[in-house]
Length: 89
Image 1 (cartoon, rainbow, N blue to C red):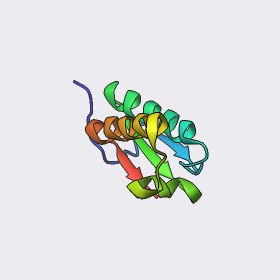
Image 2 (image 1 turned 90 degrees about the vertical axis):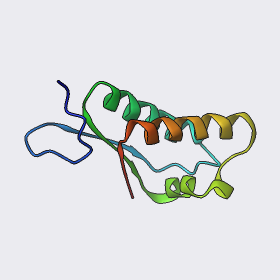
Image 3 (image 1 turned 45 degrees about the vertical axis):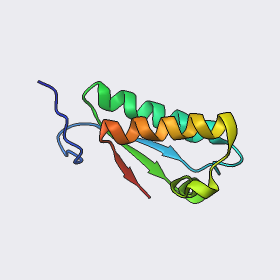
Image 4 (image 1 turned 120 degrees about the horizontal axis):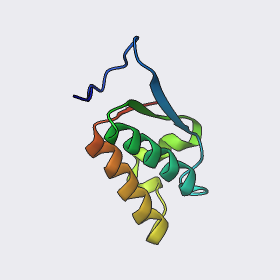
């Protein structure tokens, strides 16, 4: 049975995927961090997406790119949300 807990565990490795890029300038950096976070959770690992600096702007939809990059970013964020990964600032 896999541990699907979203709490950080002192007896297991906790994976933290970090993003600090402005989503309007470099959405692919945040998309990659989201992908790794969701994939780790799907594998049953404890994983967290940590946003810092300009990356926190991704939480405000008006600060996200439009068109195809924005669609890819929204999909990546939805995968993190559905994986029930922890997201921190």
